[in-house]
Length: 292
Image (cartoon, rainbow, N blue to C red; front, side, top):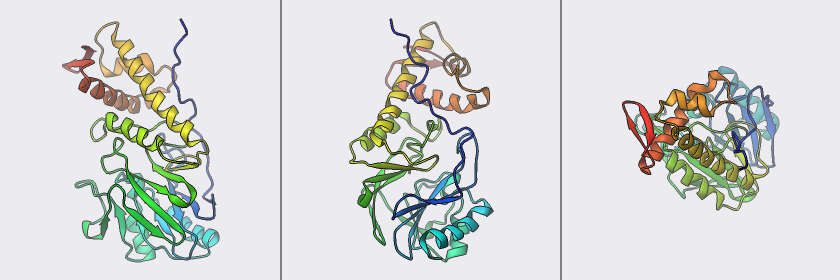
């Protein structure tokens, strides 16, 4: 019998470096959010989208002071401008909308386009222009189509750049490694459905919120789906020997992951267990899980 792989996704953002700002195409440039960490890699990619003097800003990082200065410098050097048209946000996690206030203070009273998430949006409601699945956002030389892609966050929108057949994936697909599915506000079943929906798109590239540009988008999305399916099988195999708590499951299947990342792995395991529970494949009793 062939030995099962420990993991499908083998790359990592640990120790990765990216430039402060760079141009990826005539329509897309990036400015690094400078909020590095175990879950953000080198930091959040914030994107300048458009080929005119008033581009869109897609995501705003965490609000690190150096970011707003780099954004101003990047706009000038990469786009020859000091203006922004509007802010477009993938979702209301602090490393994506944390710089909205700084951007509006620097560049004016900009509209913020996103799907609202009551109780989580830090931007005042009267400053948010609500957009939902299928919404079209037009900028100078660019057309973005919003794609509701819940699972990592209920308000998550990816944005399809029509002119390049490219996709801004936020945290749904990362440039390296895999995204965490929060066990409180996330939903792994929805996340898998989102991945399968993205796989149906005509894609030439992915611009992720963390890590480098992905030039093999279909392969990457299939890899992400296979990774989650493998984790399901690994959890079920771990429970085949008897009931276990989440920490014990993590230690049993995340043998190649440093221990400081085990708390994040535990969040994903709990998300998998909730999904498997809804599918009646596992059950829980006093924080111990077993096969159904």
